[in-house]
Length: 406
Ligand code: PSV
Ligand code: MN
Ligand code: MN
Image 1: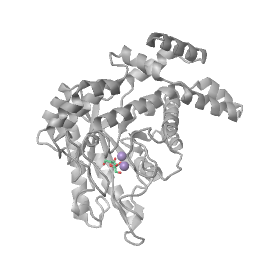
Image 2 (image 1 turned 180 degrees about the horizontal axis):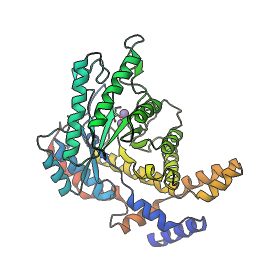
Image 3 (image 1 turned 90 degrees about the vertical axis):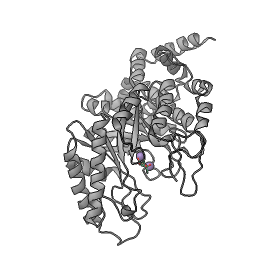
Image 4 (image 1 turned 60 degrees about the horizontal axis):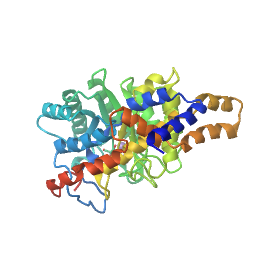
């Protein structure tokens, strides 16, 4: 059977299920995922960083690698940066170089965890001078965001304590609140502060922003410009992440995602490699919210981002795999027949409601994604296109010991 014949069969099946394929295709063509500059650099565990040959030596080369991911997937036109890892003298030049590669700079991530001064906390340090230094660093990131036309400051804090009694939890909360108010007030009205939470690590007793509720409480107090960022690796095992997503969507307080996957904790594995059903169920909530007038605007403004560490796998293929797995989960969520689901829910038909969701997950979306890519002028198989491009071999001349963790 030819690809066209397979697609025709697939389309007929979906039409018979009551799915509007043109709408699905349109949504897929407009979908974007941001990749992180640090995902192209060397990374590792606390035990070892395995240096890979060909890793970018600076931000410009990270952008070149990111451009390859965008070239084959057609859905990654922005790149998140991390300061000071990606600090350069001239950010105008970065903006121009990104544009020449068909890219833009996305979220600017301050680094408040790799300075000796932050040993006992950054924004929650007992020493006012250290808190000032941390605030000033975020202010510097706001300036950089202005220079590269970015509207997002994405904040993850490593702050926390290792032992009961080590810190005054409420005092730290108040220092943090004070700092966040100063930061948000310095931001332009169309900028957003995305507040990321994480339940442990590097702190092992208490973390100052440990869960979505704490991030939400801060975001509520801070107003319009502050929202919560959900990183899929930052919850205890068993957490119903799609429930958190649905709740935050309804509150208008979810601003972004860090996609990755976990088996145990913050494993930062390839998206969808361990639990693709969870990823699909998250997109199921996002699609539902995008169709509800109450939540459509919030859903529309979500920054989808990858946050991964490729410790043993080649970085560009790992990034492509993640992006494609995100696209697959989204495509499947678009195939849920929402009327059938709603009716089943309203008559409390547990089996039919569960089936309406699962049935979409079980659909093979390969023919759809191949067709969408062809209509976008892309190769039907982006991974194959990248592997055959020769880029992976070409960058080996950069040698070993590019930018990344020590
Ligand atoms: C550390 O847990 C982390 O993975 C956070 O998720 C941040 O988003 C990322 O590093 C970059 O700072
Ligand atoms: Mn993250
Ligand atoms: Mn993380």
